[in-house]
Structure formats: structure tokens, C-alpha cells
Image 1 (cartoon, rainbow, N blue to C red):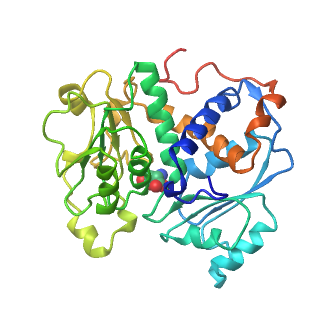
Image 2: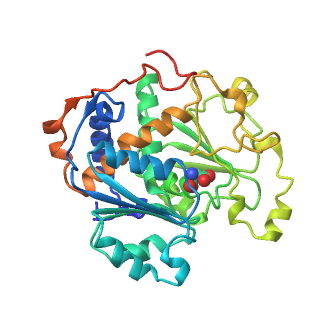
Image 3: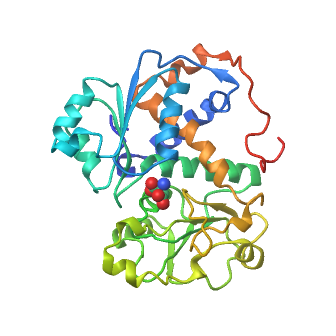
Length: 343
Ligand code: ASP
């Protein structure tokens, strides 16, 4: 793994396997049973120039759970970029203050440009419609854990990616990551005009995966193992596009009916979130809340151990974790969410 995490392109299968193993070792800390101070004294710079809840807070929490501290800035308005500062200057300045930097920016390629000006590890927290590698890693970690629970294997699995596959950066990173594994069946369903970029599909096909593209969710999905739904990325649309997609049909909304009538009892449902839960939204339906197949909150929880693993690996402390553990001393509820199953 290089000193930055900018794209899934820099990861080999060995790197990914290593990160999955390190993330599993982070579970006692992420689930608040153990405490470590392995990054005591280290400072993370969290720079978010685009909206974020999960990515910003979970990177922040992951760094804190390793014993480090976090400085963050959100939006352009309150940063010096609003005064015309370049990515190069901002990068050099932040590198003098921080030991690792996470950055989200609306322009594709911007985080790589920022990283080119520093030797401090930089993690791409989402560069416009480009990539979101840490999300893909936590998605893969989730699939791996869910499959272990269900006695399934990734090799030969049937995975459906649906929604805005053109501008959705999480699915770009995820399909590249899945491509590193043994051949599987990948079905891509998107509204016309929002298809997955061709070169990403070509790469999966060249590695032996069976990829099928469709423009509707009609048909039989009874052998489906994972449905990964995504939000229509309206913020990336031009005004003209907004008009033409105004009536994107409800047919792309995954809900209980789709799961009960066309999938099976062990199909898991994932989403990078946020989902648009407003009435009439063309997104993952809230009628699946409480259904054990809905893995979205297990998925968000998995962001902590995976992001801890990314920091520990980039900052080269992963072998020190177990040497530094002690039990937590504060109250931790037995279940996190009201709909979470009893363990
Ligand atoms: N949170 C994810 C991202 O930043 C997905 C989304 O916004 O739809 O890419």
C-alpha cells in the first residue's frame, strides 16, 4: 500500500486482505470494550469541502479511538480556499500541523493533487464523482462479515449495484475492489444516462467477472446475495439534467416488496447512506427498517474498525495494537440502536 489512500487502484489483493484482518483486530476497540492509546500524540487533519456526516465523524472517531486527536474544517466558506489558496499551499500548510489528513472535495482528482504536495499520508474521503476508497473497504468488510454469518462465500456470489452508478463514487470504488476477488456475478441497474463508467466494467470483465447491465429492477433476483443501492447524486447534475431526471421512476426504489417477492431470505441490503427518506424519494425504502436483511447500520458501524485499520496501516502501528489494550471504564449500552437485535 502506498503512503496515501487515494484510489482502490493502489491496492493489491494482499493489501486488502491485510486491511480486513487488521479491521477484525480493531473490533474490541471499535465496539467499546477495549481502549488503546497507540496513536497518542498524533494529530489528524479532517478537511471536508463537501457535505458529510458519516465519513467525517467516523474518520474522526476512528482516530480518537486509536488515542489520537483531530482538527477539522468544513466547507469552503471558512477555509483559506475561499481566499484563493491553492491545493498545493493548503497541503503544505496542513502537513506542518498534522500526521495524517483526510480530505473530501467536490472535484475529481483534487485529493490526488493535494496528496502530490505532501509526504504526510492523505486519505481520499471522496473526490466529486471520482472515488471513495475507504467506503468501498468498509463495504467489502461488511459483505465479508455478513457472508461469514450466513455461511456464504464471495466467490460466485451475485451482487446487484443499483441507483446512480455514473456519479456515485462509492460504487466506482466498490466494483474495482470486488474485481480483485474470485469471479462473481455483478448486475448493474441504473436509470438510462446514469450507467457505470465503461472502463470500470471492462476491468471487472477482464478479471473474469460476469457483468450484466440493465435499466430496470424488473425480473427475478432469487439467487441474489447483496443488493447495494445508491442515492441519485442530484448535486452533480446540471440544470438540464435535473429537469430530465425529475421524474426518475420509483422503479429504482428498493423496498420490502422487492425483497420479499423477488429476492430471498438471506439477500442483504446495503447503502453507503445518506438515503433520502422523504416521502416520494426514489431511494432505499424505510419500510425495510427492522428487517434483519437490512445491513445499513451494521455497515456504518463497520466504518470505525475499517478506518482504524487504514490509519494503523498508513501510520505503521498495526503490530502495536494488542500491546496497548485496557478495558473501557464508562457505561456502554448493550445494544446501540432500538431496532438492533440482541446479541
Ligand atoms: N456518502 C456517500 C458519498 O459521500 C454516498 C452519497 O453521498 O450518496 O459518496
